Length: 428
Ligand SMILES: [Zn+2]
Ligand SMILES: [Zn+2]
Image (cartoon, rainbow, N blue to C red; front, side, top):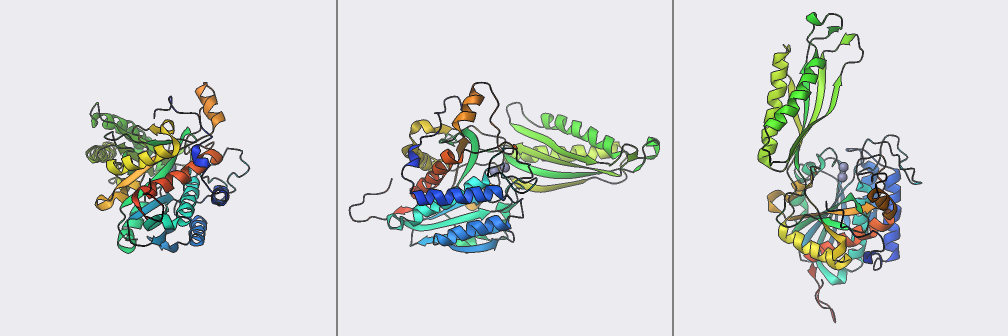
């Protein structure tokens, strides 16, 4: 990310045109959601709050789409293009350390990825569009997606929920994500650049040993040792399976084995993530990881073959270049050139690419959330800005939310057909 040239935050032009009631309702919703986060797969209350707000705004809302807490709101405004606005619903198993008055009231759970901000922004954008139905034609689909953090929700909505069959194939799918850039800015992937986000594969591996007394290693098959060797070898295998110019990551994020120092357990579990920008690299690294897990188990004399289960997959996020160019132009008109930044590819991942199924054009951009104070402090060499997933992640709502609302509405208007009216030119 080119953060060095970023304009200072705050005082956005987008603040001005937002009607006060729209912003007030979005802020209230944000504060409530932030205080009551729910983990992936448990987004019952969050889905209910979003559904209630969308209903108030005139949407027809369907709940439990895809078998989980997915919701779809439809704002039908006559024949015309279909635009899907997507927000995630879930929070993370993180203990909040922001000290904010509206901090999480749920122990060990926090909206540390900003999905609460995304929900509030979507409702604000729908409010703007609902209040100006005479200026556009088409259908707005609002999707509240559960289980993004576990990378399962988008697939459930699209496959089990048959999202596009039931609600129509959209002409564009739009989403934004909170990011530690200056609040008041947006960032887009430059046309023709690398994918905006990596594709990923999540794996759970189980190494089987033979438990026993820790003092008699010759009678046991030690899964702790097997896990340690496997973790080290996985890193090497990842390096070997990756071309020098290729960006790829293989990280073991969790190792679980044993309870006590004097007992050799009978199994160990590893959770790993593979990230890469091409499907070929993802497949190659996943194959290499499986080979290492199996070979290390065999080398240790494991009594049975290890488990190796892919629990989630997501392709790389490649925004549609033509749609992105139109959306970016709308954002530049909204905020001015200096507040729309270029974004380089990130090894972060998203299950949003599933919405591009069947060639549906998708656009995705970053919404800056860092307030002026923390930004200046970090730039001056002080405390770094807490990023997404950190316990201190604290979006500057006053500066970021109005921009998020206006950015989504402006992007949607790029696709929705303008409705010519007396004295009104075509929409920008
Ligand atoms: Zn996240
Ligand atoms: Zn997120």
